[in-house]
Image (cartoon, rainbow, N blue to C red; front, side):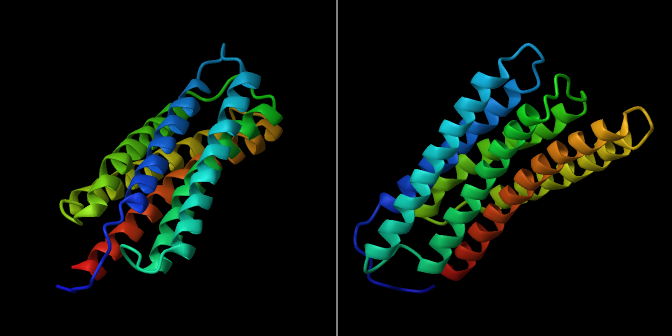
Length: 205
């Protein structure tokens, strides 16, 4: 067990929790994308606002890390965790943006599984962030994220196989593949968040 003198500093924990909750909201917006009747323009605007809010939280974390003499855990880990969380939102926003830019009116039903994995992973992440205060009971978090990431990988492979089955036109395949890739990157980024949390927990144990 490492011992260090720490001030009573809760802002980092609160900000990481805030950012993770912003990801939950972003994933819920992403789920609306599956509805062919959804207003894609309005959805895109809401997602851009969510992405901007996440950027602001990231900047605030970095500012506080730069101005705090004693941080709750290693400064580099704070930067890495904030960056990984921000990557998740960036990929979700990219997904919505691509669907709008490509004017994809109908998405394959299989994409719903990817979105469900992403929604579940963001909720699990948001539930875990407050536990950074004590570094306790975090192992089940990164185990569950790893399970979800594996589920996402299997879903991704099935969707890609479907895209190349000959059912879709070549240009449509290229567009849908970009969307599916962005969703996969978002899920992978959530695994990166979990890996960073695990590394922090090991260092602090």
